[in-house]
Image (cartoon, rainbow, N blue to C red; front, side):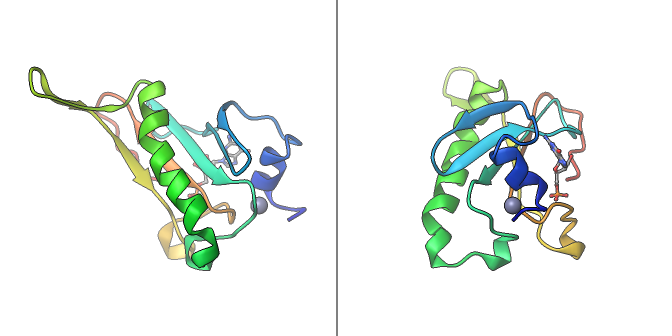
Amino acid sequence: MSDCIFCKITAKQIPSTVIYEDDDVLAFKDIHPAAPVHFLIVPKQHVATLADCTDAHAAVLGKMMLLAPKLAAEQGCGYVNDSATGTKGGFKTVFNTGPDGGQEVYHLHLHVLGGPQPWRGQR
Ligand code: 5GP
Ligand code: ZN
């Protein structure tokens, strides 16, 4: 989509702080972070919303979801469940869908928000 800002970011026509890239997805830091760690995971192939996804998107959606905890750990907000030290860390994962879901950019993206509380992270 020529007028889609996240298509321009995945095409490197607009700069972003990339934290992960492969053939299918790009992860980059949110320009207006709502938490100490806030990045977005997007498919390189344009699809507007989660509600527009079909069975053809199952693999890329799975990849996005499985990347979230890995990249969160790399970015310093991984979830730790250790028998010695207990549970700590953690993050929020959010897909906003449509106007009532608070979606502003109509290219599918998974928000990952984390870092030491307090932060509200209302994305
Ligand atoms: P939405 O409300 O659509 O779920 O979230 C869109 C997110 O994209 C917002 O958190 C916003 O800060 C982020 N965003 C919008 N434009 C840009 C941009 O040009 N670069 C980056 N890195 N993030 C953006
Ligand atoms: Zn797009």
